[in-house]
Length: 150
Image 1 (spheres, rainbow, N blue to C red):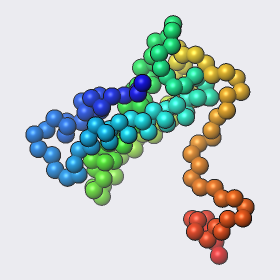
Image 2: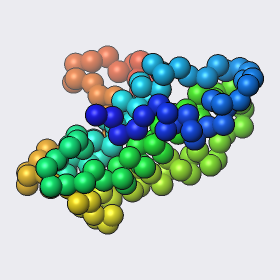
Image 3: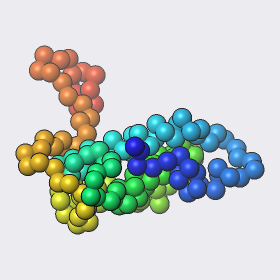
Image 4: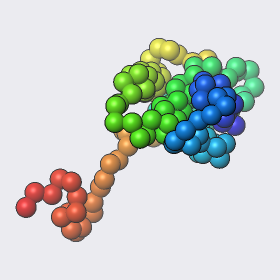
C-alpha cells in the first residue's frame, strides 16, 4: 500500500485543477505513481534500522501519519522539480522542505523523536549508510569517473 495517493499530490498543486497549463505538461497518474514508489522506497530506506518496514496494516497499530506526511513532502519535491524543470531559478522552498523531510527521516531511522507507535525493527537489522554514488572493483579503469586525476 503506497504512503501517498496521486489525488493527495494533485490537491497540493493548483496546476492540476487549472483550466489551462503550459509547458512542461503535468505528470499523469502513471508518473505520479512512479514518484510515489520512489518516495516510499526512500522512507523505508531511512526507517528500516528502527522500524519494521514497509509501513502497512499491523494489528494493534495505527498507520503513522508522520510517514504519510514525509512521503508527501518527498513527492512534492519531485513534482516541483518536474513542473519547474525548465526554470533557471532554483526553488528554495522545495529544497528547504526536502532537507527538513530527509532530516526528520534520518532521526526516525535512528530511533530519535518523533518516535512512531510502530513495531521496532529486530536488533541487528542491517542498515544502509546512504546512497552509493559510485563504486568500482579494484581492477576497473577509473578514467571515466569524476574522481579520476591523471
